[in-house]
Length: 256
DNA sequence: ATGGTGGGTCTCCCA
Image (cartoon, rainbow, N blue to C red; front, side):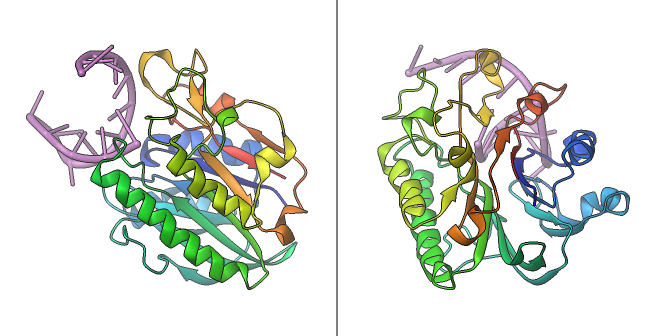
């Protein structure tokens, strides 16, 4: 079983890179975020790949999808008490897979804007609602995998030292605690599980040569329940896709 | 404190 997550920052701008990535990695499941288009606008590649496409798109901003080699039984595009329900930030499917019944979620958490802004408060509320929802489905004791842009770097190792973590969105203590409480529920961060001590990032600002200087954060993650995590021993962040011409500002995260 | 780039509904908003 091979899975990947990628904030693609406009799927229409990235069709060729997406094709390259699918051919190179051939994942069974790909979680995508920030499609920045309606569901029907990128069906053009659908016939050329061996995937079922489960898309919760939106014009202009947001938009998430799951590309799956397994057919979905159920598809849901929201979770209870989500304060951003009008934005396409969540899609969940269930499938019968090679490793049994699985629940898969593609998540695009709010960025939060400036620390302490209204958007920031909404981000924290989004996490409170998400944590409540995960408490419920955790009790099912299923194989659950979330691939997402969480917009939080959970620990200091996940943040380049040039960021002032106390007042930079995605690395404040308040945000870290939200992410850690998900991990403390018994969900595993597959990259960190496979690479306990490596400092690598999944996002770098387009500006000021951030990628060239490796000034990034690790905010994109594959999170698995205990039942599912045992099927994954390896994980890496595909820096090569970030180094391509006209890249997304995020690199894909792969696990197998 | 500002500005840097690159998406989007494109001289403004969002990251």
